[in-house]
Amino acid sequence: MSTPHTPLPERLRPRTLGDVVGQQHLLGEGMPLRIAFESGQPHSCILWGPPGVGKTTIARLMADAFDAQFIAISAVLGGVKDIREAVDQALLARDGLEQRRTIVFVDEVHRFNKSQQDAFLPHVESGLFTFIGATTENPSFEVNSALLSRAAVYVLQPLTEDDLRLIVTKARAIDAVPPVQPEAEQRLLAYADGDARRLLGTLETLAVAAGVQKQPEITDAWLLKVLGERLRRYDKGGEQFYDTISALHKSVRGSDPDAALYWLVRMLDGGADPRYMARRLVRMAAEDIGLADPRALRLALDAAEVYERLGSPEGELALAECVVYLAVAPKSNAVYKAYNAARAFVKKDGSRPVPMHLRNAPTRLMKDLDYGKGYRYAHDEADGFAAGETYLPDGMAAPGFYQPVERGLEIKIADKLRQLAQRNHEARTSD
Image 1 (tube, rainbow, N blue to C red):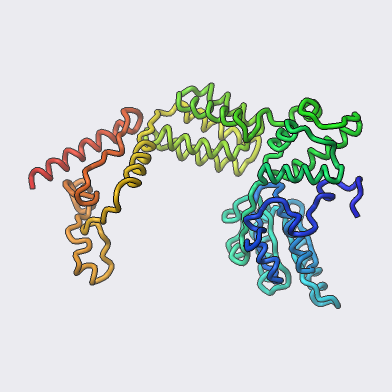
Image 2: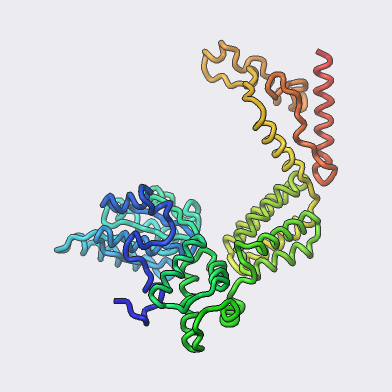
C-alpha cells in the first residue's frame, strides 16, 4: 500500500500499461510493445532512451503481464556474481512448484563489458529467462552484436511537455504537491527536460519545502527562491532558448571566437543538453564552413564523440575547442547554397532519364540495349579526367549549382574547376 511517506515516484509508478505516460509510439494500440504485451509471449529486448522515460517501469510491467519473476541487476554495481545468482533464481522458478518464467532486467547494460554481456547468451538462447536491457547509449556501439542479435531494440523518446504536465496533474490528484501556478509549472516542465524522474524528484522537494514554509501554492517567484541554480535560466522550448542558439550560430558565422564561447557557455550553464549543442556544431561546420575547411566537419564530429565518451564536465572542453575552431575557420556556404539550389531545381523539373552511357549493364540483355555503351573510364585517361565527357541528363544545361568562394581550400577548388571546365570546352569544340 502507498502511504504519504512513500517516495513520490513510487506512489505514481504505473501499475498497468494504461497508466504509463508517454511512449505511445511503442505502447499505443497496435504498436510493437503493446502487441508484445498482449501476445502472452515475452521476448528479450533492449530499451534504449534517455533517463527518466520509463525503461524500468516498462520492464516491471512486462514481468507483471507475464506473471514472471522479476530480477533487477545494476550494471554499475553488479558483476558476474549477480548474473550467476540470477541464473540460480531462474532455475528455481522454472523447476519449482509454480514453474514461473523469469525476466532479468539489466539497468545501464552498456556498463557491462563483453565477457559480462556474453554470460547472458546461453541462458537467453536456452529460454531460461527473458533478458531486458536498459541503456542510455546507442546499443549498436555498446552492446555485443551476439546479444544484440537476440534482442529487439525499442527506442524510447523524452517525454513531451504534455506528458510531463499530465504527471504534475497526477501528483496534484493525490495531494502530493500544492497547487502550481501556470508560470511555475512551465518552468518546471522546462527544467525536467523530458525526464519524469527529474520532475518527480523536484515536485517532492517542493512539496516538503512548501510544508515547512506553509506555502499554500507554488508560484514562479517561490520556485526560483527554493531551487535557485538548479533551475534552467531559460525555457528550453521557448523563445529565449532559440534566441541564444541563434546568437551562438551567428557568432561562429561572424568569426568571433569570444562571442561564440560566451553563448556556448551561457547555454551549457543554463542547462542545455551538450549533445544538442554538439549536433548544432556539426550543422554549423557543414553549413557555414563547408569545403573552405573540410577539417571543421571532422572536428565537430570528433567533439561530439569526445563528449559521449567523457560526459560532463570534461567533455564540454571538446565542444569549446570546436566552437573556437569553427569561429576562426574560413567560411563558405557554397555547398549549402548548391544543395538548396539542386533541391529546388529537382522539385520543379521533370524526371529526366539517365543517359545510356552512364547506365549500369550487369546483364547481356542490357548490354545489347546499349546500356553503358561509350562510357569513358576516367582512371584510364590523362590525369584521371575524361575531358569532354558529360554526366548530366541529355539536353540539360550545366546548372552551376556549386560556386566556390575565394576563401580557404575553396580557392584551390575553384582553380581546379576552372581548369577542368577549360579542358572540357577544348575537347568538345575540337570534336
